[in-house]
Amino acid sequence: MATVMIAEDLITIEFGPWERFFIGRARHTVPLTAVRRAAATDQPLRVPRGPRKGLTVSGRTKIGVWGVFGGPRQLVAVNRHLPGLHLLLDRASSGDEFDEVVVSVPDADRLVEAVRAVIA
Image (cartoon, rainbow, N blue to C red; front, side):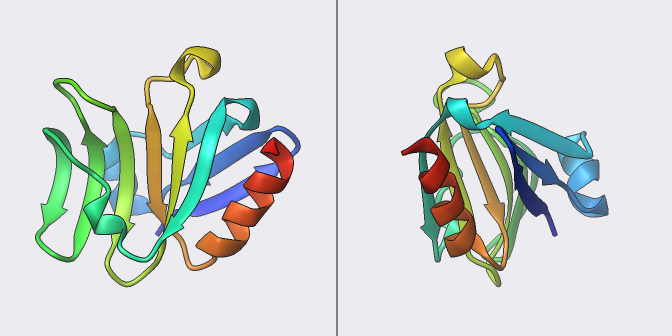
């Protein structure tokens, strides 16, 4: 399971061992200035769309990169048992490769409020 930390002007997402394997990285950092919108979702499995590189266990888990051939490029680590934190990013200002990040975390609502407090 991923953990999300907000410190100063960065959001840092640390991925668990299985997530690291399918995502190809241990952590991902996003500048808060690149976040256009933050939302919590009770159904994070519905957010990823398009062609993917990663793991899908139907109705249970999605881990990897979605939108590999076009559309919004999404970094995804979600499962059905936890709510999701959905970040829409300004890819140009962040210099990042992703337009969206979706991760399942138990405290998604608290993280959304913390991000909104900083970007508002």
